[in-house]
Amino acid sequence: MDEARARELLAQHRERIERTLADLERPNEEEELTHIDQHPGDVATELYNEELDEGMADQLRGELAAVERAEQRLEEGTYGLSVESGEPIPDGRLEAIPWAERTAPEQERRDRSL
Image (cartoon, rainbow, N blue to C red; front, side):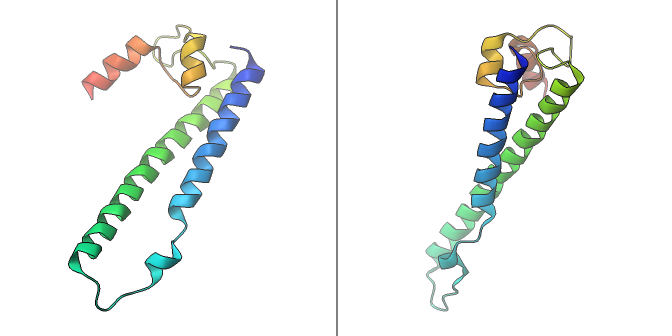
């Protein structure tokens, strides 16, 4: 994959991640209102939604860190090469996951071992 395309894809994903994180971290005005007579089911729903949002935010922060590492590899001239083996990562994989750090088989092995 050429450098310009890689930069474009990484910038698009960075923008999407940062925008989504900002939306998740922005308090909802309705949620800030306290209700004395709030039904316990509503409290449980709010707690569930807060935990779901926090989980999504954690995942997005992980993706953002991966994008930053990919941008660093781009600057170093190692973008598109596996951080594990040094083998080229196929362009199709980089189009789908521009921050990919490993080839698909390497990533599958890594995921199974975790």
